[in-house]
Image: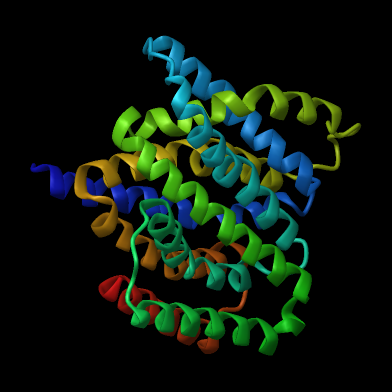
Length: 286
């Protein structure tokens, strides 16, 4: 199997794992405080990441890599989990997944800014059109939750795109799985302390589905998914394998419908489809 094919397979597995993140978070925040969920999932994944780094005797990143690791950690270890958890207190998982359709474009935008490229005017036209579609959907469906949830999701997409782009750039130097492991490792002390402080006084009211949701977002969304995702990007190319993110909203919507019995409207699918068209066009002309 050549590197390109292996990259697509690994990227597809990573995308599938990420597709379950929002439905799992939706289940978890029914019983866990969003802030505790954020730090707990990062702490659990951080302990596992540190163990992997020690067992495999990985060299420490160089000092000049510290800034990129901190940006990656802020985006994918803290920012995205926190703001999605806050959002899912106000909106359904199916509603939030529509915003994920903007993630490939946001990742590309931060990639452009970090690389110093100058996209054509058409790129910004498609970018603004896609954003307008999502904003229009949020306004038309504000009754599903409220605008606070939509605002949290927008912030989550921005910081996640930043973390994806920074992590993808750094993975060329450190390696794919090493980037997420080191990002989790440097976040671990703070995350573990805050998790201990916010530890619920009583766990008897925590349901089994909430525990399953916490386990999923801790091990799969926070760590295992990135192992496949960053490996796929490294093997098959960031620009090409990154296109697989465009499938994530559809898989996420199906999971929300199957596992949470949430309604998935025609408008949701139509919005996802139109946003994906905008993202594809924007990337082609970038």
